[in-house]
Image (cartoon, rainbow, N blue to C red):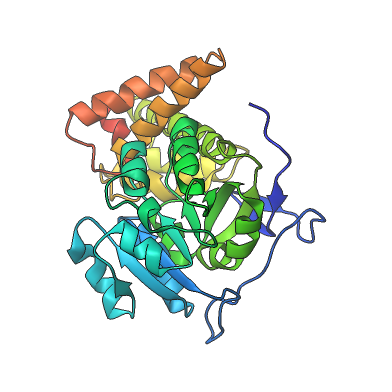
Length: 326
């Protein structure tokens, strides 16, 4: 799949600095914190308040946005209601009462159900409204959701995020957007509240594909890192020293420095659940199959995540994949 050149918002992507002042930037800065307002006029809906959705919605409220929330388990809405959010009992009612609605769901099936199912968001949408799906789904699911949303006359933008719990809390996510460009420009200030950078990638499906590829690489890196930690220990080296050595070399990555010390202690506090990482590996394999691209490293890594799930580690952080190697 050919991806168009990204429109970049000045910021940092991973460990690579993105050039500021890019001529292609569609950036519209939002003021976040310091008592400033957000350059967005209207009401914002947020569907799905899990590990990622709750802090994202919280940041919007803190920035002064008028936010209405919904979650299958209503009790997860309570902390946000205490911050000033409103509540509606269905996705349709949230979408009906808001100008733009965001959705952060755990998997493609949930994303499609919340958007298109009974009392789903589409039932509350109309011309002039926007729907932004920030879930990680496959391209086919994103296109299905887009078709249903746009059939109401509303606009659709897919915007999966790169980043886990801490970046979500700190407003440092990376948005990989595709779809309606006018909606992208409209919600840019909101994306800037929740993230440090954003890319516009063209047609619906490109954002989903980019996110799948990014998470595929991340999952494979974690397996290789796990193998290195265990091998260093087996040959009598201190795995903590390995983490330090890696952090100072060409293969340095924030993920290794962040997760390595706790992995050595066999502790896996959940920032990104292992079951979601395995889901993304599965989606990557399906994407590769659709274009006849061999990805043998990913196929092998996927088997380890499946093995880790069988050990009851689904809800642990994806770094718990190291347990499948022990």
